[in-house]
Image (tube, rainbow, N blue to C red; front, top):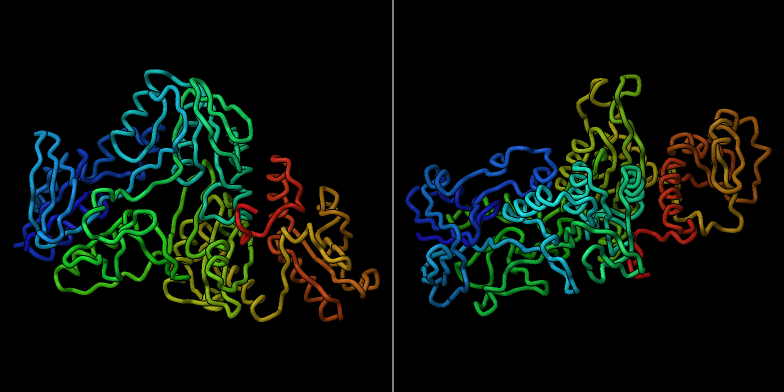
Length: 562
């Protein structure tokens, strides 16, 4: 069997390696239009920021080492121009020899990846405007910073790569501004979880321009849709990627609306003997089953193994992508998995949500920090998605949630997970257990939550009750809330109105829940603020910095253009 693979890196190189392990006799040709077949593209921002100092550490395999290990005919700087699926050939431009040739195949694996989106706008000084996707991109940015010593930088796009670039440019001493067209950074993060990130970015000296788009780039600035002109000695375009599938337009291979290659669960296209993997394919989300393009290294690596097995008669079905992702944003860690409120609302799926704020390890052991955990689940309790923002231990909690979603677990299953515990690493009730306990209380009707976005539209008969200590209350509260500490509540019930709904809050929600139990069993109608004053403060501080009134804060499921 002769297999031609279009593209290297995670999808192409991974498929080639697995194919060789499956079949020592197969003829395998891998064509990569660039010079590098396998490199750590997720590490590129950190090399630019001098966190990674050895460029060679980014190169996982060279053509020579890959051939020696896997006996694959590796052809770099060989660009596939077109595919003839009837004749089962590809037309290739060998850039080194400046010649075009045709190569036949028995099986074809498409892994062309995706290319950065460059917006159509006026751009002056293009020598200082960059995208970041490859080793050559990295070298160009690194050389420009070294030769020109820019003082200011604008990153257009507040996704994972954009924020990682902002972090690393700050590490080099540049004054950095981030421009994001959406109301918040990181599209897969719900807006209510983004406020903590916004506050941290500003604390680190970044200027955030949210809800604004770049209109043009002048010789020394980026002009925004809101009229601001942001100084820019260096510009990074990081507004996303699109599947690099132009060479397939006349091939008969079905493409989706964004140019993505349409595949079935076995990663087969609509054309016999043609398969596809990686950033260029359309997938189904694991929870909602919605069509999506999710350019992440993890799914690409898994698809690579699966497609190689399928070619060798070992059926492997791909069941969808959760979109599990994590990023270091200065001192914060931001992680997501599964569905968010926007995708659930779009799919018409009913859900509930809760916020918990937990310590990364036992409070009496030094060095701990808190994390905000947002859990999304069906009204019956099946876990649909999770988001965590914190410092230490975020990664392992997110991985537990990712596994729970893949296994179809419920919030009650989260309660029973027996996770590793010792004071330096966790608490006896891990943050994941706590998220399960709180969500379980909601599902069973033991707790009725309300949320920060509800504060601007409380019913007329609402009565705000702060159950924190007098000292906490004096340092700040919500609106005209009354203060009765939870430990005094049983003796002061006569101070509360029985004809009003008591909206309770504390610091993070735990004391509020205790107060809710007391009041409910004494005949009061109650709700408890999920995430407490801690989450409220994060939201309010961010909105204040942007000049937005809290009552204008919209639920996360609301369309972005409202």
